[in-house]
Image (cartoon, rainbow, N blue to C red):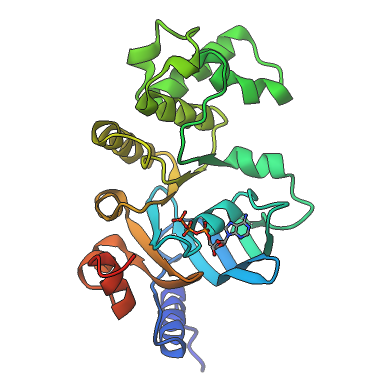
Length: 283
Ligand SMILES: Nc1ncnc2c1ncn2[C@@H]1O[C@H](COP(=O)(O)OP(=O)(O)OP(=O)(O)O)[C@@H](O)[C@H]1O
């Protein structure tokens, strides 16, 4: 009688096939038999015209973890990140599947607004609207649905609390968001994304425009947020990736060279190119 393999053994097999076929890459995914997967890409490639900026990428993102995307400038990190919630629509052609709760988010009949409600995005430069702190958080919500004042008050408070901004701003909710410091503005943008109650937060170099103190505060906030959200972050800051990332994917010329637990990427990478990058030999 043929004995069926357990799923974990299949996963091990898949890992070794990938490694043997591509000796210059090493992809070690979180094991779906043991870990909940929030998002998965299947052969996702991205084209700007004829330029294949992302080569077919197959990545699993574990739920309630932080995954860092690292790599030199132009390696494709932002392009890949922006594909995950359809931010590349109209800019680039994205092929392959982006699987979320059994649904391919890259399918043309998927409502892009719904995709972005479940998968929020925070950009490099804090970009609050020229509105009050309160309206920044409620604006997107009220475009599609009616809320009572009590409901909105509750959402504003809980979003600001999660972004560690409530204590500082609770008496200044009518203040213009343009009067906030850079660190406060970035945390307001995080609160604005959280107000939509997403599952996943994409962050594109969220601290690169901030001073070290604000950077540490945002990192602390992210460590709290990952208890409730899955976070995927692009960062140029190796210390940041090592400090906060559970998993790290290293990109080079549009290809994922190595994907593994962060501690392995930074202490025992399997591919020399990764070692050279994390040791600061190029990039
Ligand atoms: N809007 C665009 N149109 C055409 N090509 C683009 C566009 N955006 C990015 N590219 C190209 O795609 C490739 C990957 O760029 P991308 O910005 O994703 O890299 P990155 O790793 O995020 O870089 P950085 O760290 O500098 O932000 C580069 O060759 C870049 O020139």
